[in-house]
Length: 247
Image 1 (cartoon, rainbow, N blue to C red):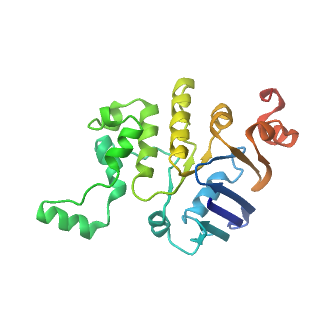
Image 2 (image 1 turned 180 degrees about the vertical axis):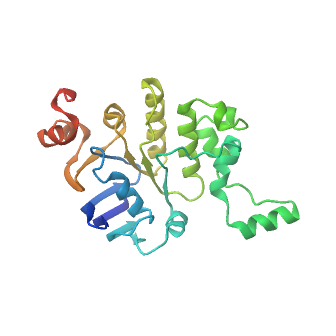
Image 3 (image 1 turned 45 degrees about the vertical axis):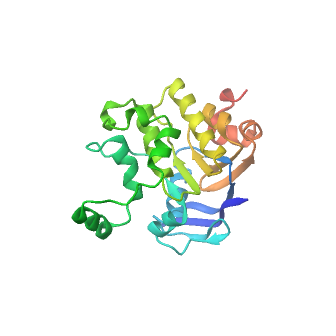
């Protein structure tokens, strides 16, 4: 079924049109890529879908409109994201970083502190196991490779009732082996039934893990389809990839 549906999404920053009538879908168990040159409107789209920037158009999660909801209510509905910048708390362990996403608000946490008991951390151990992080769960982020730090950031987005996850350039800075390992985890996320929207400039990663790809240029969708078809599209070559990068 379609888990994420974006229709006619338009984002403006003053006189700048960042996204122009963008529509896309992501199904359960599917990895959909969103690619395009810098400034094409990819992160603006993610910000709008998750409620961090005003936009016109509709955003639906599993058939229910959520575009009128604030970011925290979209998250509770099952829409999660990662961020381009480093997002792990350096003074917390990997387990604590992942568990942050299970918090139910400051008042409940304060009550738990007062009585010396916290509610179970739903799904934390399962997610750590899924991503192979249980062996480093008690380490701080600074003690991990960049690849594992990226994986920990994605793991945190999956705890709770996540149904759709938007990954904003998660492979940035990874070497070839780390990117391949990361891609295997992305496929595992989709295999568990979640819907994944992947934004990245690593074309090998996109081609290897995505079922479908959308291409943005100047805020508009200029192509969509299978990775092979999209990466061979002459319009995409001219706008983004360069013909020398496409077999």
